[in-house]
Structures are given as C-alpha cells and as structure tokens.
Length: 110
Picture 1 (cartoon, rainbow, N blue to C red):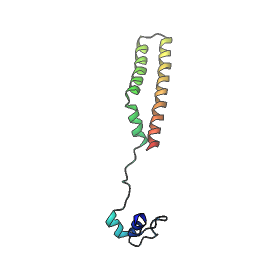
Picture 2 (tube, rainbow, N blue to C red):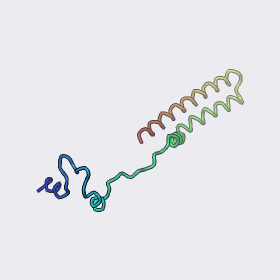
Picture 3 (tube, rainbow, N blue to C red):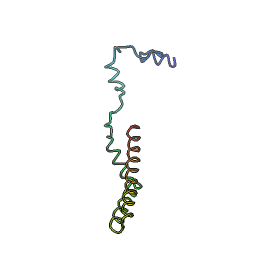
Picture 4 (cartoon, one colour):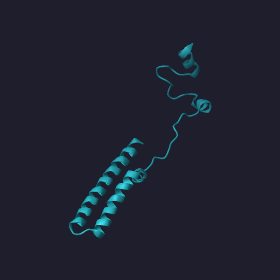
C-alpha cells in the first residue's frame, strides 16, 4: 500500500497531484481546511526608517553632530564655526545614508 495506497485513498496522483477541477473540493476543505497562509499586513518603509533612527549608535551620532554645532557655534570663533558646520553636515549625511540603506534592506527582506 504505502504511498500509492495513500494517494489512492486521497484521490490524487503521485506525479501530477489533484485533478483540475477537483470534484470533491468542498468536502476536502471541510475535512482538511483550505491550507492558506495567513495574510499579514506588510510594514511600511517609514516604519523601518523610524526603527533604524531609534538605534543607540545612530542617536549618539546625531547627538554628537548637534552638540558640536551648538558648542562650537556659541564658543567657537571664525574658522571653528565653519569646521563644526562642515563636520556635522558630513555626520548628518552619513547617518542619512546608513539609516536609509538599513531600512531598505529590512524592507526588501520582508
């Protein structure tokens, strides 16, 4: 009996599966269920972006860039202010790139 006997009892062919259309489909659904995957709502890109922005290292980089602008903007002179703005801008741009890449990879993985 084995596999062929089981296939005969289920009314299916071992190579081709169920016939199309299946004559007793309603009875099979009642007995075995529909065998569907549960649909779940997909997360938005923005939710992944926000998740990345909550990472401690990202928050630390943003804090340090802002702190540099504030401190050197108030206490710095001339060239120090310009350097603070340039360095902080580079940090902000880097964080923007990293956060977007990580969010995109998580979003695509879903």
